[in-house]
Image (cartoon, rainbow, N blue to C red; front, side, top):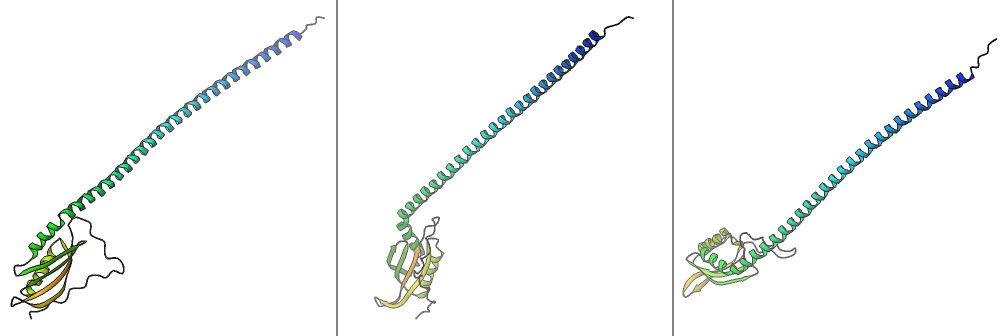
Length: 205
């Protein structure tokens, strides 16, 4: 009887199977490594893109901050310039105020009225004078009120007087001298007496 030893054949097949499994494992490991490398590359690219966007946004933020700082500085300079212009305007008004006051009074004074006293202090004007009638004084008051240089015009008193044998009306007026274009003065402080209201028009005596 012939005997055949099959052990070497089985051993060879087993070794081939093991080599096939090892080959498959190697291919799988290579594919896995390649996939990991690809994913890593994608992640690196995304991180680099995100960092680039962050840098671009930071640049824009810095530019906006610079623009905001320039705008704030410009607004500050504008405010300082307006203050300086206001000071210059007030200085000019104070320098030309007395001349302008006399010019305006001359324009407002009727022919049959003469001023005997003109006092000015802190823009408050006190006028005293004589006129031939109450109507002339009323015309003078109206002229002052229509002028843009006078405000708060009040007639304080009218009295009959004899001037060189002629009957005349002696009057007293208060007003406030203002310069158009300048900020108006603050209203009277609390507790400060307001100017007296004008008396009712008086007829000829």
